[in-house]
Structure formats: structure tokens, C-alpha cells
Length: 55
Image (tube, rainbow, N blue to C red; front, side, top):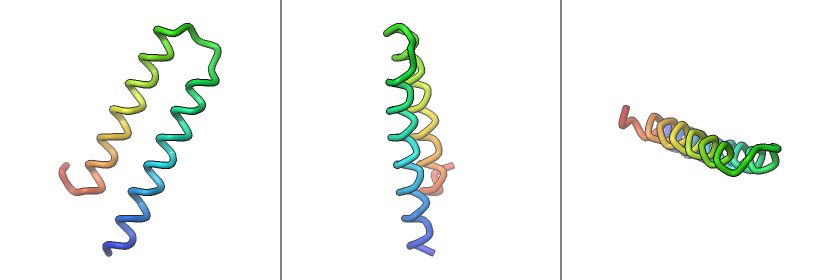
């Protein structure tokens, strides 16, 4: 049980890093890129908290 939770957290963390990298590669202006990064980080934190059974 604990190992599957740890693997899920690790996969979620890696997906967050990948999506943040891809957002950096998008041809957006700086303001839109920052908004997209904040949205990705918030969604990532919520999903990580879900795995830690906070929600």
C-alpha cells in the first residue's frame, strides 16, 4: 500500500515537471506563460495532496 502511494506521488511529480517544461516551450508571452505555470502548480499540489489523503 505504501509503495503504490509512493510510486503515484513520484509519477505525479514527474508529470508536473514535464508539463512545466512544456509550458516553457510554448510560444506565449511572459504573462500568459506565468499564469499557465501557476495553474499547473496548483493542480499538481492538489493532486499530490489527494495522494496524501488530505482531500
